[in-house]
Image (cartoon, rainbow, N blue to C red; front, side, top):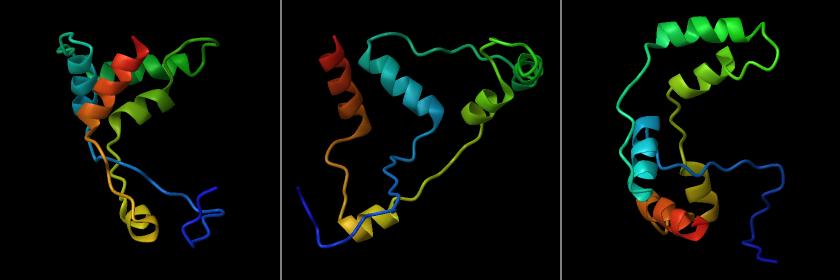
Length: 104
């Protein structure tokens, strides 16, 4: 077992590449050699439908899912970089491409 001299018990580390959802989808579409989705539904309409889904059992769209897809979160990686010396070894594009090749 690898040990860096630091105890990481009860510690949470974030590994992030600070990309938007649109960038992430575009990277995946490119790796799959498909067109990136261009059509978008108005958020207000989606939220209204999602509110209905909160009251219907088995309805797949919920307000919490819309929130997760529309809120932009920026996670800082300073803790893992400082405490564990973490650095990205490959870009997100290269990592997603490798994952797609492996999955096929």
